[in-house]
Image (cartoon, rainbow, N blue to C red; front, side):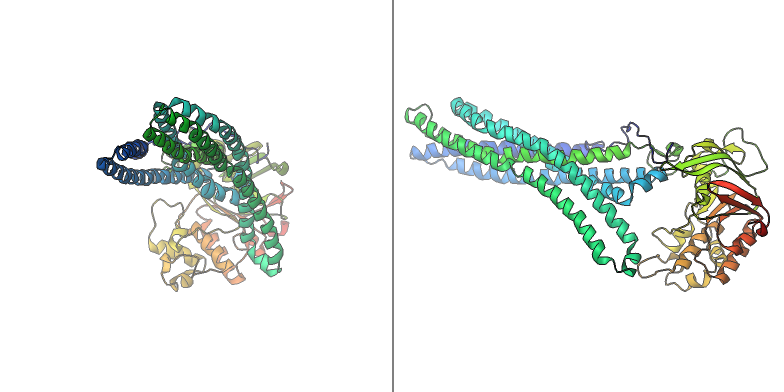
Length: 580
């Protein structure tokens, strides 16, 4: 099975994106916001009736001052209630976005490596920044707007119906055509936002890849060509967004035109009804005010539906991401809060026994993107000593390390670690017993101390850290930094490629683990420092098994066992450099 084939599972309720309050605080905040919005809306519905009563009192020659006072109180109270509602719902919406981003990031860190590489960094950034951010549309500019608009529209129509049902029928007939247009627009908006989402993700991926290759781009003076390619990506996004905006913009004019038609019809017929005294002048003016007031909530409701479509598109993208199955064994790797469980690195599967080899791989095959990488590979790694894995580029050497770490799942064969099938090991326990250095010699965003103590549950003493730095010839360099061990890497403190590689390598000397996997650990190191590192690894190998993928003769020369891998198979296994 290809590494790019990944199962999607049902998203458990605990993992779904939450757009509904799930805590007492959020529930109270949401309910209070909704209540304030309803009260503000309800108070506004009274204003036209008060205006109608005021006009009738003026026409009778005795202006009702109390009506003016009531209107002022209503307007001020409605404004305060509406503002408070907006603040509360905004806080809840922000918590929804925060929760979604945390879910996406925590889930992404637990996905199979093959899927992460296949999807690309840009897609993950898009999910965290844009899609998660648009979930806010489901709450404040979607759900709340829709609720408030619905209450306002039906409340307004109810009062209008009490005033004169004939004029209400005329109003509804005028808005019927607008309703058809709005429904058509909303169905199209969803399709357009799907395209926008896809084009934006492609732009994010392209730009993130460009930044990673910026040195090469500058060296070969490709800034103009690359900028042109990115501009074409941006143009695709803009075109998709313009289509969505154009479709969305049809709603408000349709509602306004319907209101104007209704207004002309109501004024024409209403005037006749006032003339034959079927309706009083005050009631007629109140009806007109309600009709004018109807446009706002209708546009708000249509806009809310459109915003909800945007939010739903993003929610489905996030939920689809959360449905991708975690790497095997990772369900038990974290607790319910998403934090890694504490684990004894000596924990082994039940029934495990002592054997002669720490790692045994038998007839292991693995394919990536339909291409065979390992072909029935068989090898064993001892409990002590240095094993060098050599061979041409692309022969599968680094993949051997990934298989042992369970970054990938093999297609066939068996891998045993300390006598037990590696698939039966608790993933946390397995990785806690292995020190690993990848080919990129990656450092995390943090201080020197934080980089040295990755994965260490109990922070070791500073003497241990200084000794680890000394083993890779970085002691003087780190001591000269402004903050020593607590100096943040990056920004004003930049390390060379060789320094970064040696700092990453220093981790293996901080805590003794049964197995140390190193992928080209000295590729960027000069010969003098390489000699010191080889001596330190030689000393370390007396206590554990050190496996080194390398092209360096000095590293191979110190190995107790040399394994030559070619085309995914072990071509040769010997204990001397001359055999390579």
